[in-house]
Amino acid sequence: MNSNTVSLSAPLNLDIDLTDEQFFQLCQNNRDLRFERTATGQLIIMPPTGSETSDRNAELTYQLRAWSRQSQLGKSFDSSGGFKLPNGAERSPDASWIHKDRWNGLTAAEKEKFAPLCPDFVVELMSPSDSLEKTRLKMQEYRENGARLGWLINRRQQQVEIYRPDQEVEILENPQFLSGEGVLPDFTLDLTDIW
Image (cartoon, rainbow, N blue to C red; front, side, top):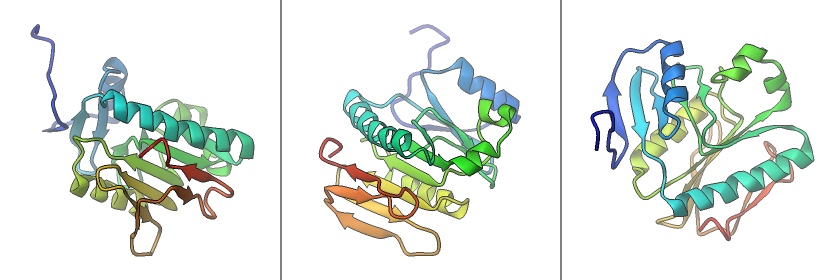
């Protein structure tokens, strides 16, 4: 290992003061890692996921993208898409979607960097190294910042937690399908290849 290599076995949290531009450049210069920043400015560095989690996340993103292309109602994003939430946090959900009216309301410069909004729909697919408690806090943060629907997919327990504004979290045991409800009309996620 050379002196420029950092080994990460789990997410690393650092208290470091970065401007928005410095954070964006850090992400661009280190594309092998995933970065997020909390509302208080704490930097979170996450190693790449394992192959199995990556495969399942690709399936999730594929299904969302196929629906989004067909419906033409908005834009879908994979896990490398970053968003600057209203509370100042910068997050990258495993999959997300934004209604076209909100997307079209952004400037070209805003679309180039981390879009300054919370997606309408977010998904977090837990990997073996993820903390359930921290992932739940992230889901609550999305909801508090404007997400209209969120799914926390917990493969270990074969559960899905559904987050909606002003409602208690709904927990489903081993569902085979999830409905996009009114947020993603006619979208159904088939969990067969995700479990």
